[in-house]
Length: 404
Image 1 (tube, helix red, strand yellow):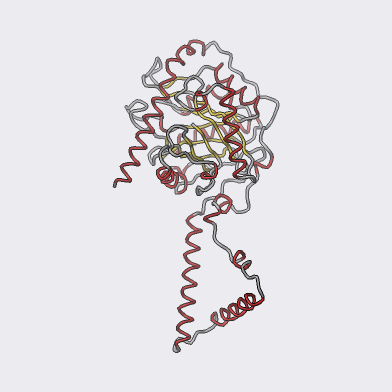
Image 2: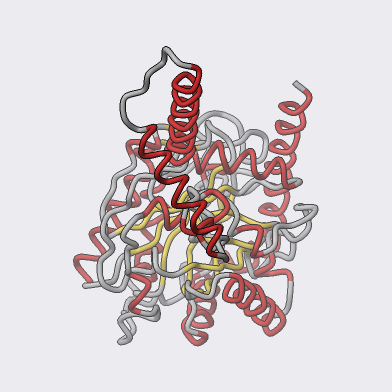
């Protein structure tokens, strides 16, 4: 019971802290709100079709083995065979193999030796059964075969999250741009060193709209960021060869309504999308007072729009990130549409000590897989914070890592 209470406290603290961060940009954002209507919204797609390596769209032959850390993979006999370094050891191995071959035949259980062989055979079968059960626990459904230009699963995304108008919402706005970009490079390099087989694609993830602590003039408890601000961040990402992710907090609005003004950017090949159910408020409670929720139907609205944009603009597949750290944040996850044009990542975005993060990752990513896997790391609230090597020990191994 104590463990459950501590976990609940961590979840509640996560909601409160994130909400306070969201409200921090309200004052700064309001100065720009009047200019939003006059801003010229870009509606052109850059010439460059993709900024990700071609190998990113490569699907491994065995998906489960590819996303299972080495420490959990079933052991093989090949490693044990290397221990035989002398002729006598090799002869012993031959004798053992011959003995096992005899035991595999009919066993006379009336004799003491026969009974011993029967017990040995039963124990061997039990070990095989246990090994098979362990593999089954780490079996994950294979995502749709990736289309050309896809970011996943052959590459890993490392993203910096926040809003440039607030130092409290994440690392994206906490540091001056040069230092922020340098820190992102450091984190990306750490994953490149820890997993030399997987290229790392960098990303800037900007929250827009931002959930608010008051209803505002629209009564929707959210604030859309100025087009000029979004465009500046998009251009920064493109200039660095990064992805640009629009992270949507709908407040008391809807997914469809809040995606509509973002379409000009989503038409670009390097721009992707994230949904934050924590700030999707279906009832009377304002954002920050209660953890919000989205259903698969809400997520599918976003998927349908992205599919349409991919087809109409001949774009590479889009990545759609859905944040989650409680069960109620995302309902009917099994009904989320599966389509190669939209690569869905479930991102476990709760904070806390390692044992709580591991527990949440197992509950909301491992046990409820959709397509791809992600985790958020907090600079100030994960104590201690997972290293790149730690992240690669998670089962399943994340293809998306976000820093806040």
